[in-house]
Image (cartoon, rainbow, N blue to C red; front, side, top):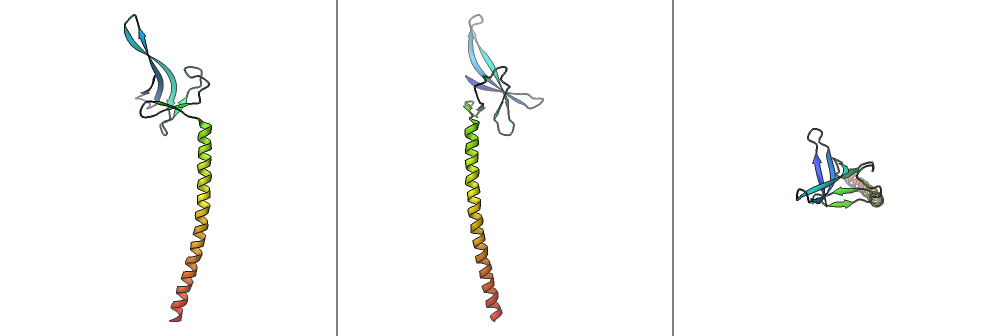
Length: 122
């Protein structure tokens, strides 16, 4: 089982199919059986699934085809939790850096005032 990508040359839309081989005893040849999964997002490379009426089971969340041609299942709830956690960590880091910035600015103002005082004494 593999993921097949078809690129429409006119529109540039990439369609993704799940392909499995099936042996045809009449012609004594192997034939592919393809199931339409959906289209590929041009920016992220993620699968935009179909409505589920044809080809896709309703139970699957979504899958992404990586460069090796293998399919990875995407759990959007875990992805959202991960992004929220990263956002909270970044916000905490920003607050920490802002407080350090405030302290350094105050130190700089004191140093500038001391330099101005020394220059005025001459």
